[in-house]
Length: 419
Image (cartoon, rainbow, N blue to C red; front, side, top):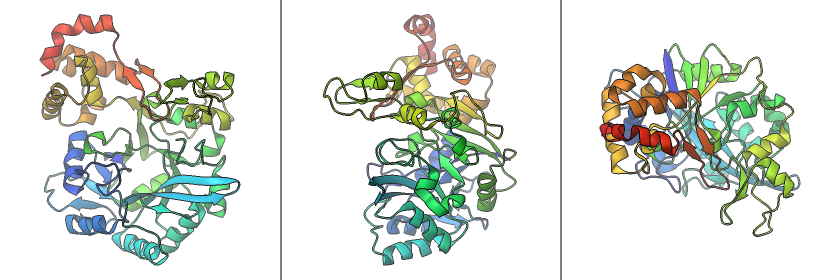
């Protein structure tokens, strides 16, 4: 049974997050996207945990479904929470985001009670902030239940990541110390892809996972994981991640990393965007304000890598790079993705073909051509990697281009047919 899983998102109880990030809307949008297993997010938050208990029903195998989802293939939820750890270690302040996955509601309740008794504030934000070393966090959750999974989130982003240039570490061992053998996976994040991570031999035995890190329903599935499962089971997911089982972990679905908002170096205020080579030429200093640049993911990977780009480990899990369907449609229309034109076209395509991932991954180009030649050409180019991306930097998302202006003019008669 091939399933698509997005294992990292935030509920409406996290800051800067849509009010629509609740169980019914997550279930609804997961079906639109074609996601079979989705994270709950924010299980530590007392009010959200109350809602999860009210609205989800256990499948008896560590996953959950929405009580009102009576469909033949209901969306399954896995208990998850991203937490923020800010603490002093070595010579600087560390800021790391960590994804926790729980095998049961009982384990979640024990963790929440433990955190509350220790004086940690779990009520103010769905992504709580702890003044706690992640090594100690790992020990705490595994003492509660050995089947908890501790996964460093978006490991390369500058500000809150395991290898982040601003507050991270140079090795997993430096961060997790004696708890390192219990770290089975790491999340690559939107600004890096597996090929970039393959440059570090230290990650060869770590399972690289990819997730959408969504703050709004329409952003679900920007990245995801494709598994071959026997059943909807927490233990099966736990084991395939722990063992890096290539028979069951088929591939990851990736954002083009250049589109991520921390891929290159720069200063957003100064409108300076540099490749790692340009940064080195300028000795890491912004030529406008004369302050240190925010070093992006590409620079940091290059700094820690012990292999050239293009190296592929023998046990590497494959990946496919995609562009969200809304962005593809927006380029076909030459408008912003939030417009009514794009929404109407998107809704019509989902109604006709079933889900976004079916369109991006499975529907033949010939069938798409029957619907619209321009759309078919765009999807084919994305599947083949024939896109141009202007890299993101310092919080500014990159820009994907599938067509040049001459090509768009050629397809103008096809544009309105997307409606």
